[in-house]
Image (cartoon, rainbow, N blue to C red):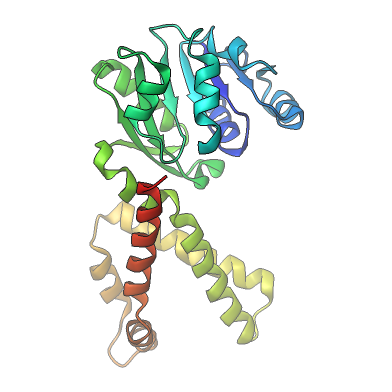
Length: 265
């Protein structure tokens, strides 16, 4: 199988690296193009993939083609490559805010196999959450193949397209919220006397371990929260302050704002 990437930035590199490190394909079976010579040099030196300056050279020769460009470049890039893409090629887009209808109409091919996806930055460490939305032209085997490819980066799950704005807010953009939470906890730990480097480790590991507990136990987050809150204890005192400050409401409002921007992209 030959896999191509239009764009060789951080997310494309994470996907390429995941496919290679999990032995899904060899580096020699991957090619990428990018307008940045520095990005291509890094992809070649760090991953050992084939690099091109011409997008058409990548698009015309692969079985799966990943579109990893910024939304404002999407139309120009698709217009550039659409005449050379083979009809059996599976197009996998990670372009934020661009619908299946947009992709199909820009390619001007009703029969093209297109998958809209939304990965997130934890892909860089193999812990991504990826939403996968295939169009109706893909077979079940092809859908399973795309899911398995993204499982090389973490977790992948097929969703309907009407959920993509929710996905953007709950996983696509949410690493930023989590990083802010970690930073705030670390700042207070520093205020209380802890060394800065130690504070980041303690805060980050607490978030990582808590998330793992939710995933591996299957328990409701509220139940896990109650397990930590002893009568008249330290934790319930902290929870009370978070509730008074509107912690839940602030998170929900932030996600609503994120989803709204996603809808209008």
